[in-house]
Image (cartoon, rainbow, N blue to C red; front, side, top):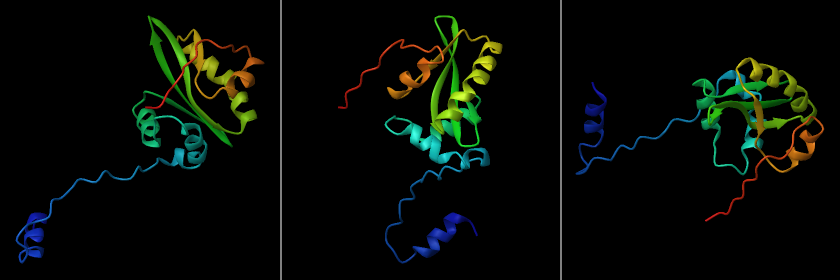
Length: 145
């Protein structure tokens, strides 16, 4: 018996059939993300992105996932006016571990042809990364509507 026939049988006594709405499935995290879900969700706080956006971008190869023992980063390679850069999109977890991951990510980015690293995030990252040669570049201002 088909699904439609089962619905017909169940609702045979009712004059109108229910409208079946498609409910999006819950995001099923690949195992590599599960441990780092709290770190990623904390990094997403205050942004317009959802964890599903992160998983989709990494699984599609548009972003790179850098898991640590107590933290995680997500980067994207972007081209701005013909110049390749790596953008640190998200970082959450143990601050010391995150900072210690920077040289490896920078080396990998150079191998990909990137000439700069852009770190997006809260204002506090400016102070943390200054000791490692990072400096303010642009400012994004936001107003909720």
